[in-house]
Length: 151
Ligand SMILES: Cc1cc2nc3c(=O)[nH]c(=O)nc-3n(C[C@H](O)[C@H](O)[C@H](O)COP(=O)(O)OP(=O)(O)OC[C@H]3O[C@@H](n4cnc5c(N)ncnc54)[C@H](O)[C@@H]3O)c2cc1C
Image (cartoon, rainbow, N blue to C red; front, side, top):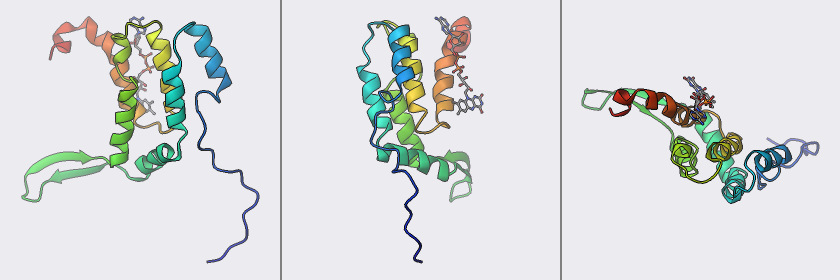
């Protein structure tokens, strides 16, 4: 159906660097992690601003997880299927060390760098940040209970 020409809208916010365009974050990283390399943050910032990355966030939110209680033979499986976009987001988040990697990172300021990366990546989609942030935050608690950590 034809409609009027839409002229009062800004262009889509895409193809920009989420890190470099955030002046407060750039300054905070320079202040809290002086001298640390920001090349990974710049790379992640560019990735987070790409239209195809932004689309993953929309796909993940539009396609809810599906509970499959049984397989086609009637066996109980209780499987939850996630849309591939969720898996893609998780893959990129772990590739950039947003989960537990700072606990083993020997470079300076690993937690500040990880926090900044998490902030940048949260622009794309929030939901997958839950398991990603929990697997980061759980490490100190597990270290206090080695009998559980070893399971
Ligand atoms: C969108 C979203 C939805 C979520 N939904 C849920 C939900 O429904 N249910 C749920 O349970 N969770 C959920 N989560 C996860 C949860 O809210 C927290 O994000 C997660 O538990 C991590 O907490 P945090 O980021 O505050 O990390 P922190 O709590 O800050 O974790 C860091 C840990 O490291 C320790 N630590 C820090 N520095 C040092 C150091 N130098 N030496 C030793 N230890 C140190 C801290 O004491 C702390 O234990 C969600 C997250 C997001 C982003």
